[in-house]
Amino acid sequence: MKMKHVIVDLKGQAKSFFRIKSNIFWTIAFPLFLILVFGAIFSNMGDSTTTLYVQDLDEGPGSTAFLEALNQTEAIELKFIDADEDIDQYIKDNSLTCVMVIPSNFSEAFVANSTATVAIDMRLDDTVSTSSVVRNIVSAVVNNFNLGMSGGTEHIQVDSDSIVQEHFTYLDFFIPGIIGMTIMTTCVFGMQGTISRFRAAGIFRKLATTPMRPFEWLLSRMIWLLFISLLTLVVIMVFGMLAFGMNMTINPEALLLIVCGSAMFSALGMIIARFVKNEETASAAANAITFPMMFLSGTFFEMSMMPEYLQSVAQVLPLTYLSQGLRDAMVYDNMDGAYSNLLVVAIIAVIFVVVAVLVTKWEED
Image 1 (cartoon, one colour):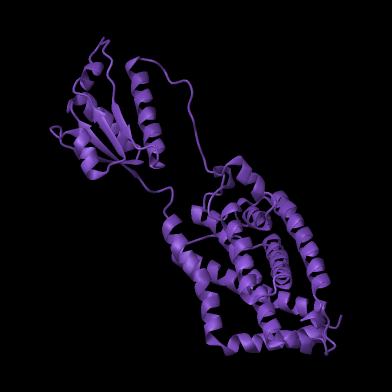
Image 2 (image 1 turned 120 degrees about the horizontal axis):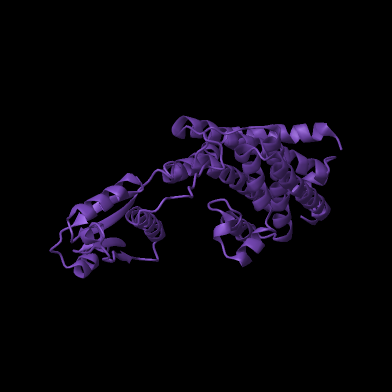
């Protein structure tokens, strides 16, 4: 292998890339679009409140105290329905999903030595995720009231804390998955698109007459796509810090994961383009392979939320190990996890690169 061949090809790629201004724009615009959209969605995650509509038929000291306790949780925003409204019709007319009706005899339960039992009527749409949150909060406040009225003592307390360092937000957890996904799309489609164009233009047949070997050409493309991946990483990090106050950790483990991930997906893009030689079909094949990985590899949500059979599928997807490794290195400070995921990514990268080199025969194009 001669590095001068690699360097010459790298210079050619750089000139071609920077000559077309739209290349620079879309390389930067794509990650910025992702960080803007998902940053807006997730930056306040954990600080939001759930709306609960309340019809208070009691309006006595008991219901007042109970509603005040719900307010103090700071997790529920109460909105009130007039007592004279037909609650069933009101729910239907306003498409409500979380409604609580306090019965007219609610305060009787607070009278000394009272044996009265009252029931709060909860009307919840269980197809909405916030319904379970509302149910749990109301149940917790009810249990606390029951404990107080029985004169009992609370012997067990629960203190909770985040497993993520305090200065990290949910967006900090989310961004490593976006970085992994961006590396995948940049490298797979970058390599697949280049090979398809070169084949259509007959450039590979010309390369076959030069001293450059397939591995040198592949190495040059991998280095270039690694540069693009690092460029998008910088864009995401800088913009995220300025716009959303992210505090991410860039360490050698994270950089090694990015290098290996870039090589892995560049080689995958080359394999796709070599086996699917029609330009339009190759692009569709690349989409068919990368699109499921975006949603099944824990990029947008925890894999534990998926059914077990889909979790099993996720375990064989390369993006799973890249995204989780980046989270271990950049968020959790779990170096053991980062190294184990790095090992998997590196092994897959070596396998993909070897296969890509073996299947590359310029004379056939």
